[in-house]
Image (cartoon, rainbow, N blue to C red; front, side):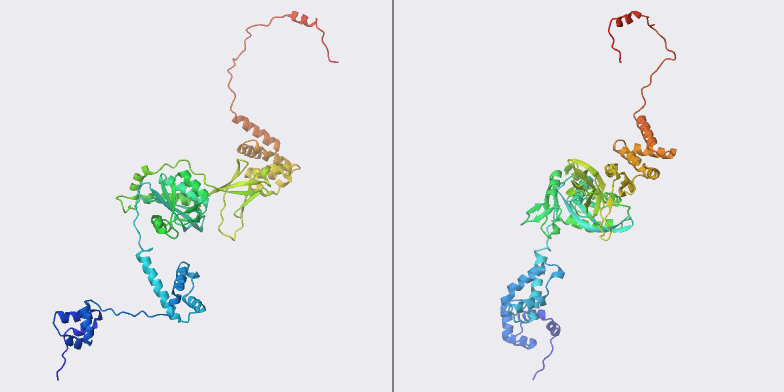
Length: 525
């Protein structure tokens, strides 16, 4: 009998199963060991060792036979379900257990484990496809000067008037120089979009040839096949006014405007996280504009040598001049109530009384509301936007709109809500006049003077009457006429001599009276 001696390095080599075939090949072709000895050392049969050596492969592959499964008749239907669920949000997707129950209802008698294994394999294959040839692979984009700009919205927070408010930030970025501008608005509506692009073109110094947008509802009414879009009429009018070609990304393809998408993330770090408090939205937008322009000189371009400001200065010659700003408003037709008010977004705005119970046109701007009718502008109000639904709507009065009403109904002046917003001098005069009989009529006559004279002149006359302690209609009218006459200017100065001289003395001629004697004169009886 003989004793098997351990070969040095065999245990370590054998423990590495991935290198087993490499060890067999080295023993056979390098060390010239017989197949019997290799089988004794590895425990494999001689036929298996011969097969490995003849195959000339580095690693043995065991072929798994194709065995039929109970899930095969339902594989196509299950794949369709998984594809549909992958396009839904996480909370709306069906679980694999629910799909297994639906398959059982269709006649499947297999286990849940088989369905779960199929789903895991399908999701792994989908993820691999996305990482290789789908959303995980991109092509770098290069733009020429003045070729395009990119636009996008984002939601951010700021402290305005002591209250933390959620705002909609409009980001506009030139694709070549990467110059950007951020502007905040309360809503993502058409008039906000029009104003955002108008202000962006003003700051950026011109209009590029193309604009790249996502499929926002303020621009696209309907998404067609491929790049076909049914563009909103207002958006198309703005694009035609500024002469740029709108281009829309594919749905859920934000990487097609990746520059402005990254600018949204950078703006939160550079602007919104370090932002101070502001008294109103106008102050916030002024601060954002100054900070954006200042950061152009601080941020390197990345692709071209120099900062964003350097590349933007060279790109200005390739941008088209902005020209006249686009009059971007959204028009609504409203009927004026008997109380001379129109309703819009839970708020009420006054209209001249002559248009009560009649339709008018509301032109909605980001910061104001213009009311027009019969081809002329009737009035203009500051726009009120309230996001909190627990707050009641506001009413914006203009007391001048109700002067025609109180001329017929002077008693309404005493408790009329619009007249609480009159200047303080008018209210003091009203307090004096309403104490006497007929004072409401006198106050109406004084207020009606603003329809024919300058309001500041009437207000000054009322203030002078109150200072003199004579708050009467007659005195106010007297002071108003003095003020108006003084505004007309002084008459031309006449240089008169100290003493007048008679240069031609009149002659006495009584004969001219004789001509009257020969005529019959009718005397009044």
